[in-house]
Image (cartoon, rainbow, N blue to C red):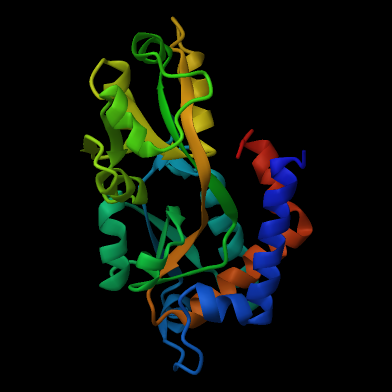
Amino acid sequence: MVEKATVVGGVLVALVVGVVAGYFVGDYLGYERGREIGVTWNNIVERGTITVASSPDWPPFEYLDPVTEEFVGFEVDIMEEAMSRLSQEEGVTIAVEWVSTPFGAIKEAIVAKTADLGVSGFSITPDRLMEVQFTCPHSITDAQILTLNTTVTATGIPAEGLESVAELTDYGLSCGVEGGTTQEEELIAAGVDTIPFVDYWAAMDDMVAGGVDTVYAETPVSYFWIEDYGAQDPPIGMQIIFSRPYWPVGFMAHKGSDELVEKISGVIAELHSEGWIDEKVTEYGMRY
């Protein structure tokens, strides 16, 4: 069997090559060929800052350092590296201003131009592309439903797990998500008892406390939670009961921010080709 990491890596390389060629960008990421380039990049250079809206509850993509309270994580590193390289290219210094924003409000901030970018584990979906555009992807995830080991034992969920999210209703299980996510939309459409939370940490803590039965999220965050809760004293056992291939993940921008998106996509392509992103995946111990 081909290793998933190899398959994902191959797909990402193909996507990045398409971006560089202009084909993938034009047909998938929301660009409209021939449209006049916006002025967002020029404004950023003049300001010397880029405002990034993010919900820091998605480790290891983005979270707050427990000591400094500053944004850290995989996507944070990518964004900081991109602006460092672009600053050098422009001969200026462009600082990244991280703004903690509820996930469900980030897209609205991008559309209203109160933020330059949304960096918060955003899946690149057709519905979102109706309102915004995206950089080329840095990752491709799996969607996964987690629950406590005790819940699996009590309900008799088979060892092979569930075949669809709709099966949660067969076992009488509720599912927690962060409000405004693609997971929330999918669960509601499947008729599942869906409980939205202000963020995923709240959903996970509620499940551990005996509230919501399951939580629907994505890799590599789901694996992070399993390890994090399992390392507590006493350990809290969790497992994945549903998994399926999901969307590519990229940074969200306004429809009129073509030049900004092109520049950051170019850096992400470089980071892929240099193996820089693979090194970060290893550094953060990420599993997809």
